[in-house]
Image 1 (cartoon, rainbow, N blue to C red):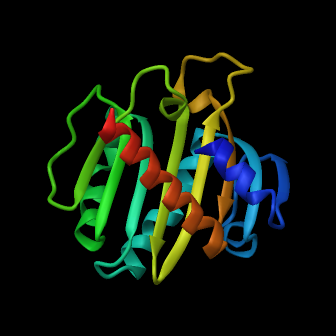
Image 2 (cartoon, one colour):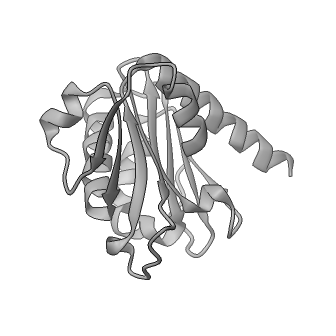
Length: 181
């Protein structure tokens, strides 16, 4: 997904922020499409901004695609995602099957194989009539660190409706490929 996001964004105006330690709400709102290198706390904040917007703006319309690398990383925020599932047409959760998330009629779990590129990615894509925003990141393997909070990710954030729609279509294709396998 990350490589596809970069490829699709290359045709748009992309702002390169370099390495960032934080992203402000203003940066998030004012930059339509940007790339950056960041650690997990920064990605958690950007994800929280998207998740909050989903909770405040959607009404049973649209889909949300999210990837946690490992499903166990969803554990601390499972309640938030159950509420997102309440408000979404469908919520797809990607991750390695190391934990069993709670069940919800609007939530589908897509198990990613260990070692796959998708298992190294962090994804939050909201595609609804009232909100189109995405964060797609991949673990930067140049610095091997064991602790999650210390890991660096190369990320792209976009609120360009056309790019978000393409990312949602790509996520649907990934889902179809996993179901066909």
